[in-house]
Length: 435
Image (cartoon, rainbow, N blue to C red; front, top):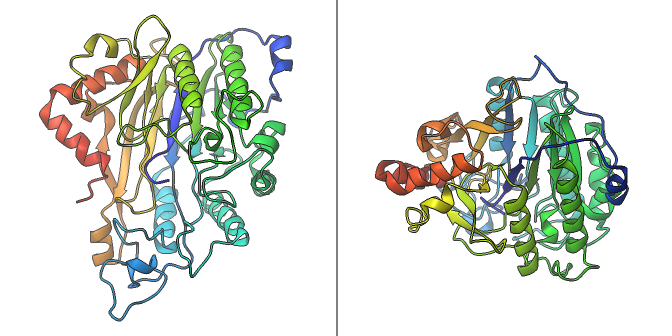
């Protein structure tokens, strides 16, 4: 799924663990993957939708998904990809991306990868096999391991709608879970029974301060025909939602410990339409409203309360009603952002976030303070046969805020609503400066 990755940050305050609650939650405490103190840099990488395609051919016909040359060599399918087509990511672009990461994106504390690793299964003449899917997952993990020491810079991956053996369909006890458990074994992740049975897990990344709740949003995804809605108590979606609820309840009692929520499919699409099953959407939005603080990545939205009945809605940065809903935005519960992708539906892009490490008393640990978005001008890269990542924008300068907790996101949306120049820039960056 292109440009539809959720990275959620839920702020909560914590006390001691309650044994009864812990027993009710199928979770083992994992050893933290980073250390506390001066070694924290207050930065992390977010990257998504690599969609590596070993069959990509430079100059091939985009109508063949860039797998076959036509009568004439295509000028669209360059060395680093075919911008705005259904072609996936050539290895040359993946190489260039990780070369940039290794050379220029240093001093990060952890990596969030929100899935969609294999190519799309669109080509009837080249069916995507289970063997190729497994190879893609293995290949991409090796890219990360070569760019970073994942023993000291934790790499946290999730499952996308193109990561399983059946597009969009992931079921309870899906075969892909065991395969990924084996591939990800060197990462020392907390892949307990919740992952082997359901594809989701919680991972502490900064001891006593920050954990990541990695959701299998495929269970909530309306296009997943293998799983019933969250109002069916035995469905995989409902079981995960109960687990998430208990996690949030548990960690809301732990003083000074924050949570990030991450997953592949967001609650809403770019056009505002719901992507989750109806009851899953309602329950998930209610949890964000109750426990939310900060969420980060591309299209800026806010979760706001509709009143005292615990109903919540999503408001976009380019929503025409943003100014009219000023009071609600000032009480924003959580921000929702969609991430830019590597696969060149738009220009390839990634983000480096700055977050609060707890050294000051102004904001909770994990509060997003800023981010820098880097991108490749793909047409220029293909013309020059050289892909260079460059800074596209800095969030604090675009939105005029210095922190992206709930209230900060509300201020950012009002900035876009009231400032024509910022609104124009926002729309440009939402498409990663693609023409």
